[in-house]
Amino acid sequence: MSTLPTHGDIRSFEVEDNVLCIGGRKLTEVIESVGRTPVYLYDTSLITRRVEELRAALPPRLKLHYAIKANPLPKVVKHVAHLVDGLDVASGGELRVAIDTATPRHQISFAGPGKSDEELRASVESGIVINVESPNELLRVNRISRTLSMTARVAIRINPDFELKGSGMRMSGGPKPFGIDAEFVPDLLRQGLGESVRFEGLHIFSGSQNLNAAAICEAQQKSLELAVRLISGTTEKPRFINIGGGLGIPYFPGDKRLSLYPIGKNLESLIETAERAIPGVELVLELGRYVVGEAGIYVCTVVDKKVSRGQTFVITDGGLHHHLAASGNFGQILRKNYPLVVGNRLHGSGLESMNVVGPLCTPLDLLGHACQLPAETGVGDLIVVMQSGAYGATASPVNFLSHPPPLEVTL
Ligand SMILES: *Cc1c(COP(=O)(O)O)cnc(C)c1O
Image 1: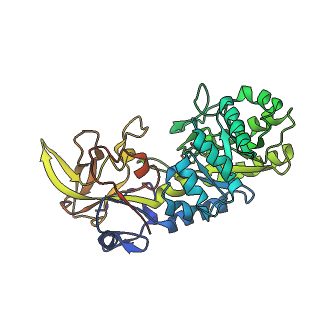
Image 2 (image 1 turned 30 degrees about the vertical axis):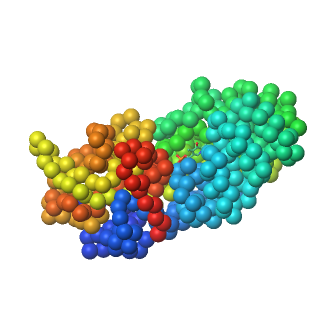
Image 3 (image 1 turned 60 degrees about the vertical axis):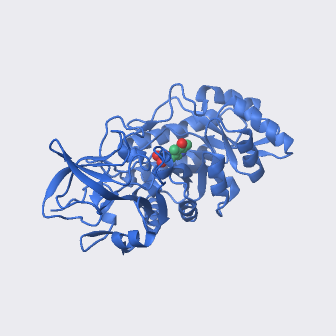
């Protein structure tokens, strides 16, 4: 009987002798050469394939950026940097990773509230674009670039007056710490942004993890219309408009893969609208999990198996401290299982309901509730959490309970 999930990207992975393959090799061999679990494995060929699919579906003039916070592992970022047009960072640490790639500096942008003076200085010195999140931050950028006798590249991050419908994480609409409220932007642009900055663009990010193509199209259209409206009546001319991203991936049973076709069609017409309103302007889409999320798996080893009052518990060496999102504690409202398989035993003679838990002394440390796994599953087997290439290791409390951190390996 098969345990393969019917959603997610499991079909992109080969199976050989009942063992999951990644990077063209059997998982058991990969783990042997890596030396230990828990480990995150990233298949860079799947990242390449995903970006190729995006390029094929989206208009050629659209600029594609990668939001590093989804997976900031330098090897992953270097691989992605060759495939996309730009990188978006959200901290000084991510900025250092981005600068270490061949990406042109003006195609790197830094968004995020509460940037430190040190981060702003590093941004001005390196010539990347600072997405300004508040009027006060704009004053600080001016002061810092004046001190450096340099001109800062600045984009205005806008907090729009709408939300992305059906989004996993809302990042806009209403009172928000992100961006400058849309209603203040025309005055700001008319007053001028200051002597020591150059206006480069507008940035609108309305939400994340959306599987509804119609909602994404609507948000992108509203974002562009808002940007054009805010610019009209000012003498400023943006080099680019970043209309966000939000493209989701199927994590849970019942999730349907997003169809890129309507999004591509919509963007074609938006590019024409943008060109008419602001000739030569670049339209930018920034994606994180869509690029890397399905290319990564988290692998841990079964350490113990026990039955408690009728329920079977499979206890692994990995858990919430490495993969907070799979435990359901990274923004989910109702906990659902990530797709989970026994990597060295995809098919078994029969299936049994098992809870897969980690080694932490908290009931939150749950990787899979009532999973149907091969009855033979036991100590030494490899538990694989699929769809784990984004918001994994770096979005988890790795120091909680002082276990070793997970390894991260690109294949
Ligand atoms: C987090 C973030 C992203 C990436 O979101 P995904 O859901 O991973 O695509 C893009 N842009 C901004 C501004 C973000 O904060």
